[in-house]
Length: 196
Image 1 (cartoon, rainbow, N blue to C red):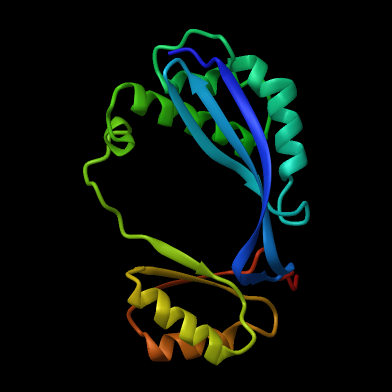
Image 2 (cartoon, helix red, strand yellow):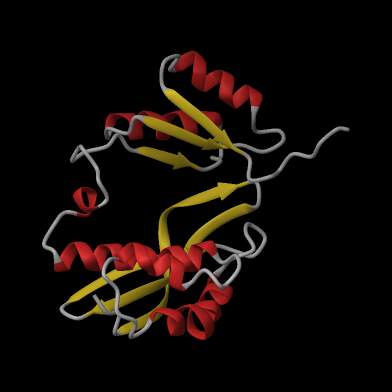
């Protein structure tokens, strides 16, 4: 396998429903899409969306890191398998999301070339996995409970809810009292500070 081209595109899309975390409410998402061509196969992956307050990586850092360092490290290099891509990018510190976009696209390209499902190429044993969903902070607890009900009815087996100071214990108690047995997690996106 040889990676011949890497193409980056930035897209912006409105969300069907707002997504709110402790950082604020988002109504549209920006993403950097990466397309990799390796001989006859093409594969695409999202490399990053979000804002700089959430992570040290965002569209601009992913874009420039891929363009200046990661793409030159992998383009045109003969590879026996996709797992070799990580080693070619190892000299660049950090930038895990940008690296993951290239590596994931390389795995996808190898699976396409071998006409094999990706799960099988990665050594998976089952064709299906139980999926989860992340639900942002809502305008009311009732609205959140309705969204959880909808997602459980759609087949999601893991529910993650966003929390922040003032939108936490009472919310989680209400969820747990209604669904005592669901697999539930919460994510505050670093909104809490240590009291030490």
